[in-house]
Length: 210
Image (cartoon, rainbow, N blue to C red):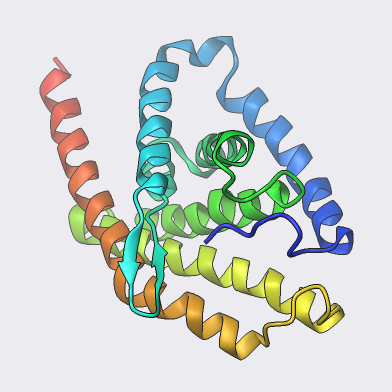
């Protein structure tokens, strides 16, 4: 799902950084200050889980692969801004040390995978979670995956419209190649993981409470 370096021109990457930078600053100030120290170990563990999930490639027909994101679980447990910061850190580490994604496109990838998708998952969870916690978590994470996919596809489609020489794949072809595995494999896997993990963590939290 990551957009690699070189796929997008500065006309898209710079505005994405301009939008992401104040959101990063606001999120860090709000959720990672001295008053939030006790929550940092749990947030760090969830971020590590998201990192591991994104390194596990799921083969799909056509000779390519897809992967889970894990940011929806963070959003459900800690809110979309925490998910945004943590997913951005995951994407940064992947870009610097594993050649996945890239630095120039970090803002675009972070807004799509770390904010748009998790925010949708969080909103749906708020609407559905009280009535059916596990089913709500599944639906929220599944929808969040599709929103992230749509955001990535939109960025690539805009680049193709602006400069086919920069990104020559027509939008219908590219969108089909992205949404087919997202709708049928990655979204289902993301939903199942989120529902199971959320249920387990919720039970652990209830047992620890006096």
